[in-house]
Length: 66
Image (tube, rainbow, N blue to C red):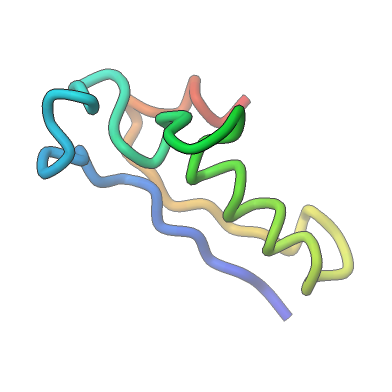
């Protein structure tokens, strides 16, 4: 099984917290993890390997994924 995570939106509806270079999926809102990190953690519970996770994002956000 593969998990596909869509993380390319600009998060404009959460303005002013989200910005062009820091959209809502990469914000640490409730605790010390971003929504993206929480999604990765949930995905890791259902796949055999991190290689089974496919992330779709905007080229401007690639540095958030490393």
